[in-house]
Length: 154
Image (cartoon, rainbow, N blue to C red; front, side, top):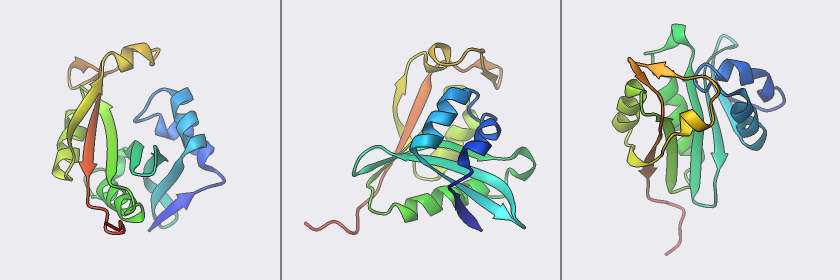
């Protein structure tokens, strides 16, 4: 079951640092955005933090499935839930590190494609170097999904 976490969302900040190791950034987007979790037997298995950018665009700030539950589609279910919940939006953005090969593969399988990058993001905004798949995370790569807005009047 997917539910929004409202009153206690900042309590999950340190846990969300598993996929975004800058606690200050995590706390900022939790304060400014919304947090949803996939629960099974009242235990959260996966999380998605989102922020509305404007009338047409939503950014997925964090998508995390806890390690023991990966590969079961919980992250995909959360992403699809958000896309349906925000069907009034026409653009969805999600970012990941240049070293996050698995994330890039998942996002493209879900209909996202590469949009743009922010050079040296993980060098400029993260106090510790981050390594994945034998390479340093340096750039933030954005992936975009554009959908037809079914509620729009022509």
